[in-house]
Image (cartoon, rainbow, N blue to C red; front, side, top):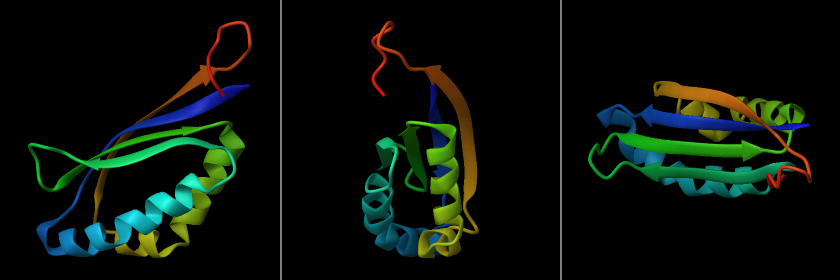
Length: 102
């Protein structure tokens, strides 16, 4: 089985910044409670006030897909429609042999 890792950032328009910040804590809380979520971080960039750095790990493709579907149909999904997303996705094999946590 391969865990899914998403890394990158979002760029938020000035006009949406306050709204995004207001919803972020709820989005993080809901995501961390999802089945299969191993790690989820959305952190403000220290040098770019409109950028938030994103890091996600999910146990499986199915868990990641469920997360994407939930987000698409959530308040966070509606609030972030004008956000630029810059992500890369990779897969990391998980087994007891290579000591990769899953």
